[in-house]
Amino acid sequence: MPDLSSLSRRAVLALLLATTAAAAQDAPIERWLDLTPPGWNPYAKMNPLLFGRLQDGTPEAVEAMQKIREALDAAPTVAELAGRQARLPGFVVPLQSTSDGVSEFLLVPYFGACIHTPPPPANQIVFVHLKTPQKGLKTMDAVRVIGRLSLVRQGNAAGESGYRIDDAALQRLR
Image 1 (cartoon, rainbow, N blue to C red):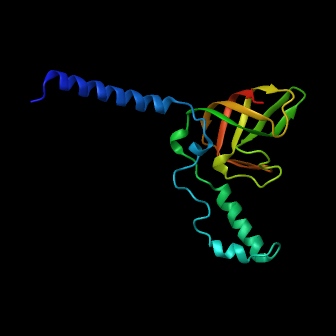
Image 2 (cartoon, helix red, strand yellow):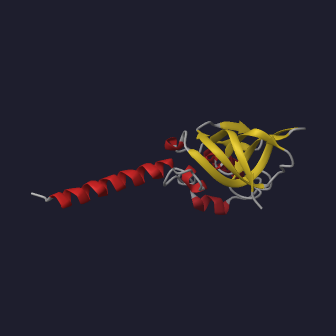
Image 3 (cartoon, rainbow, N blue to C red):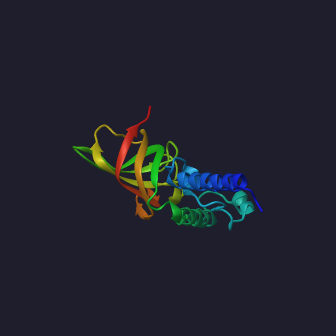
């Protein structure tokens, strides 16, 4: 039969483990990788040898690129992140701007995404609606967005987003 100190140590250990797990669940999402389901690979069903033989502009190349774009736009999100607090750094692709400033934009993980390069997967694009419009916010400005994630797929000319943050706060990064 275990003694009282052994039971106490086990109880303390169980409490620490439970507290650590709860704290991890409450910790804000700060990495883009966390928005992607583990093991997800948009190219898994495609033959890599085929791409080496394709020539730009051919019907086969156009079809292959269309399939890739469809796979990236349908990128799965992580359901467990719904409602979680996020503090994501990234770059701005403005969508809605008035004389008061930018109120809606896409947050993307790397410079040039959706502007100079094709859009990243939908699970790597966050549609952001700011609590307060920001004057002087420009394309590809580096920012950190703070708010609650929701799983909302939204398409527009700049790209398909898999996540959304409403009433977001914004920190400009330098």
